[in-house]
Image (cartoon, rainbow, N blue to C red):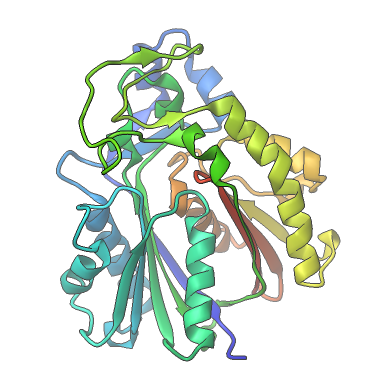
Length: 337
């Protein structure tokens, strides 16, 4: 079988920054220290009013081409992961192809996934390469969750930030590339309503301008992102330990053979809980979200990029990456550097 390699990663953060100080001024019962300690985030970047997922995706891709010296002509498939597309149609990937001036004889498609989106994107790219359909797949993830957030929703506003990432998956390994090993994926649509934007699409197209307040004082309407925090926590606590174990088994690896673990950067409290429950040594478990927040489908890529730049991830090391969240949807794989 043709092997697949994750060769390059770049990311883009919007210019506007929302700090803990600003949030604390809006919600006095949440101090700067409380947000930083519990959530693990100091600031998050927010897309401008006229800045959308395609704009950020293009910025991330252009950085990728510049930083890695990849020739655009090498791209023969474009995957775009977002839950905040510019339009219902056309496919945002098609407009990005044009804006990046990529070849016209390539494939391009969107797929709608959240915090597991990067893992699923890697699996699709690996499948395209294994089937001989593509040699170089450009995977872009971009999300503007801030546009779904009610100003009165202190919980979600402390967590989520906007961002985009771009990476190249190829059939040939670059100098700092990593082979993409076997995947373990999962889905449970019974949890769909625990993380949802109910209005705006075909099932509930009309906007209802009524706000409701949950038991924790978070305000939202049908057009806003609703997250049932306790249920999301229960979902991850129940499913992610098995996901990690099954991924290790599928790759014929033991927990001790993994050099680093990089999970979806949801929030510090949840990550610490998972690390302890799975019994991962603290020096092998990495959190890199304080400067950008939970960026949904880009969190793992941002963390990987930072860890590589810091020299934490080295040649010949194996990194287990896992994404999980909205859907419910989850997935994991191992990168062999």
